Image 1 (cartoon, rainbow, N blue to C red):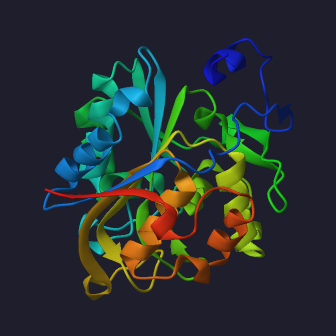
Image 2 (image 1 turned 90 degrees about the vertical axis):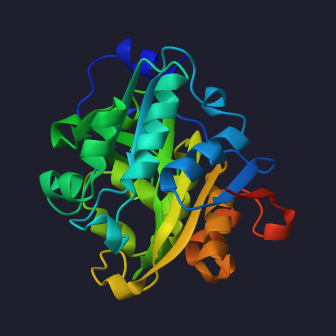
Length: 295
């Protein structure tokens, strides 16, 4: 049964009632990771998904699709703190062209949503591509069981559960607490509640989210990479052009490859080591089924 159909047939859920787990655990090894370099964020995003076999592999006809970028901060495209709007536009278009009934773009922003959605360029790009753009509404919080060691029962926005396909579209950048923020860390944006509490054991929290919530496709924006002073940034001198997009159905291996693009050893980061202990994929890039393209 599709996750949105399950919810439709369930009783009305409030934030104080346990919502049964509607999503499976993350996929293990054996998934293709595609890395594409090029001059256009839009073009390399489309090429990366095409190289995975096309969006139709992930989006069924008449599916409801959630696209979850990083729209957390009131920063411009050039500052590299939020997902590139051209990447988001490409993802929305591909999902609709694959036959999706509806595509929703949403994040739980840290700065005021009206500001972050506008300044990032994501709201305009998503609407232009045909998506429904939503702000996080705390009246739609429910308790979800992530079955993790650090993150167990935690409030999340049921918007992310009432869909058939969840596409995670993070930006690769430095993070002052976790070292890096990529796909698994981007899942903080599906949560409500006091997310600051999860910083106490941040590596395990990130690993729990990556393992406990099903991401069908991860598309990492590594076009402009914030190398220092993340996650908020602000200085253009901290941003480097990598002109890369990484795509995979395996969120963990997408994060490992992205760490290499950043110029880091993935195993230097707690969240990678802890997720590896959950058998989420290969940490050795030489063992990852990686396809690299340039356009």
